[in-house]
Length: 118
Image (cartoon, rainbow, N blue to C red; front, side, top):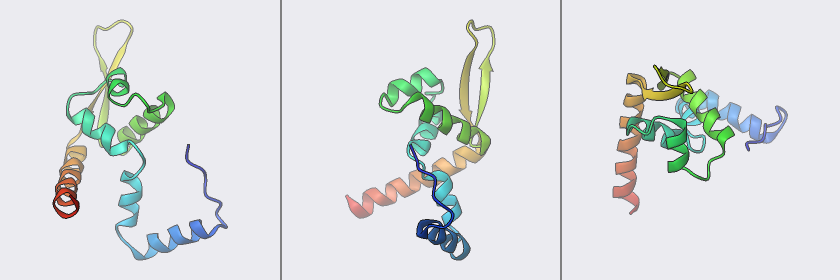
């Protein structure tokens, strides 16, 4: 579980300096939480229900998976859809155009990393 950073700490100061002087910091902070891009990628590959994601990532806690899914939806990277005529009510997630565009960039970064560091 992530620890809150004290506003008076050097870490908080460093984050503020980065935010003021480096335009990529905010984006990196949004996409960097553990599991976030992996979950979004799996949704794009039609692993789009909570239970399916738990099978792919068995070590992720329910709380963290729920948090990441909520962030992905709130940020407009995916939408949450109730599956009609299911009992109990089932939910699935689908990647939005915004999420697909981000995944293209992440995939490019992955390819660059394979080329440069493998």
